[in-house]
Length: 521
Image (cartoon, rainbow, N blue to C red):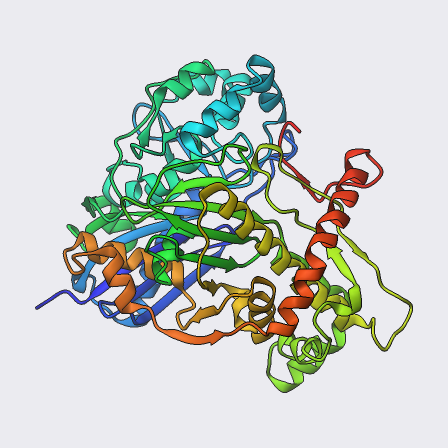
């Protein structure tokens, strides 16, 4: 009998889950467990990863999705994995985990300062090779281990990423794939492989790198231990996956040159595909390997739009929360219905939280609302709510322009996915600000679908990753830009940029607190 199912295991920032798909891309089942990453009280800004509890939760998800769906383990053609990016795991010579941190771990202020003092130009040199700066990369973190835990550092034999760690737990084979591996800042973008010379330049071990397996390439098979832990069948094929944003792009069909996606969650990611492994001369925008071989992505990140929205809902919209519970709907549905009545531009009011990305000097001003009057008819709570949505779209416009300046290319349309794409108001605002059609995919588990497509490719079910994505993705709706609203937003954009820089200057002077600032700045 033909094996007819594919499994994706997704280790996200806030949860881990196992998702089953059939080979036509239909989701059959999903089991999710929330997890948290604790700060070590000795090290402010730290974000430890508990690999013992993490694996218990992950294998529980696998067992339970098999149980809930009734799918026989023998009917699973292949498994692949995805995860939050930037998190790293360090192993000893026996392959036992020694130390791990999650994605936005920020304990390495001292080490960033040390690296800058060592060679003020080195970060730019590393960026030109890797597309990464010290802000989220592995170099300062590994240097932190060397400085703060020297005995542990002496035992370090291998470094890997979380998606590869999941495969290692299933198979006993550790390989790193380029889409997430490139986020370490120790990869050469062009060769899609480790560059050990980067480690040598900063005085770190240069022989701790496992082999590289290209995304969609078979890595191993579920071994006896992996099967006993998870309920999967011994011998099930396990395929190299990728980082969450890159696999999200595969899951929404953003697989070709000059295509672009915006993923609207707690953070917003703008992803622009290119077939050239170049970087930005001004080091402002991140460049990663795509999970489609032979493709790369310029990536610009907006900090906390989804978190700002959640804060606003919980702080000011208690009545909507109560009414939504009574009506059996989501509070955002009620909030959006009112925000839709506010004209584009919010009567001139603006807000600021995330800046347009500047990767080499990444910092964000204190959150601010400005330019409103004491007129409750115009400036009510829904005006402020809509201003948060408009601000996120303005940041995205800045990111399109940033990537256009770096590459000379811009997309003809935007694919918009993630939680923010569920409400039509935000989709329309994004179309109006950008002046581009915004397409919303039907699938809501885009990252897991991307992992399933890679699993299917490794199993020989889908001969071509990009073609499989094109065939499996379905569309919910396309939002066309409103010309009048677009004109209004075009007039607002330059003043908004100036207002933001003035707010950032206040934080630079210490008069207000940065919303976020990269280690060492």
